[in-house]
Length: 296
Image (cartoon, rainbow, N blue to C red; front, side, top):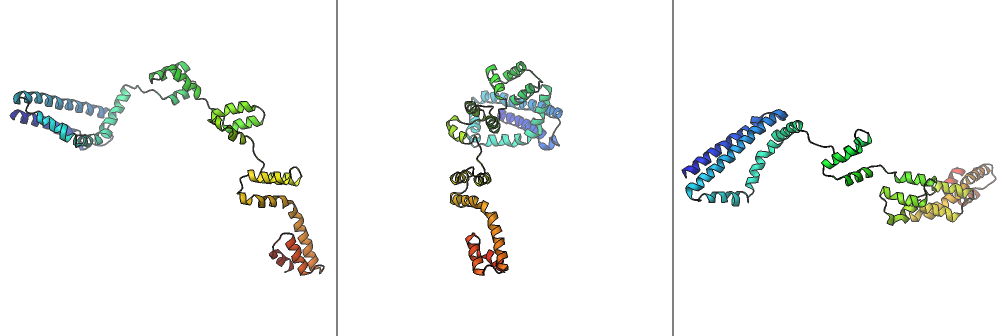
């Protein structure tokens, strides 16, 4: 019992002293300089080693003196404290403030003393592209990261920027690519060949409804073709026929307006009666409100 008490007291004093020296209050303002953090980390490491050594030696002496009867105390730690998570909780309480306060700046110090980081593959590729390093150096640095030469070459080959789908279609429309070539190159923009019928449907642009109206007015297309242009523009189905009719009759609007102007002049000259004006306005597809304005 006497040995156990002495060992416990000595170890407890070391723990208390170490925790006091590593407390946020003792460390002071954060962040520490990397140099100061490194010094304190060394002190903490020595103190921790002392605590473990004292506890270990004390445990051996105590076990020898008590014929192994202190084994129960070790079981308390393993079966009670650890299972309840109290050991982990205690560790977190100590390490949470120490991580940003001490460990991180200490890492900065040793990283500066012994720099060993290698740029990642994207940065290395950029270096090759800008001719800062050559391909053999690129592969060597990739090997340091555990990537063999085959994969390094594949990574390099895959970094090149492929033409966009829009650029491919422009080249195809200008006759610089054949159909089979376009289908093969679509893989570069990650288009699945299983859906080639869908991609093929997007190769060309449809005329706009306005362009369709112009072609219809000049007699280049018939009404069914004009309707198909409206359908392909994505208009809601219920409005396809009304809008097609509007486009087809659009060329009549100019002459309808001119007719109404002449009709209004005839009414004011007494050539037409009000009833005739209203009937003609309705026949032209205008509302009765238009007739009201004409005879006002």
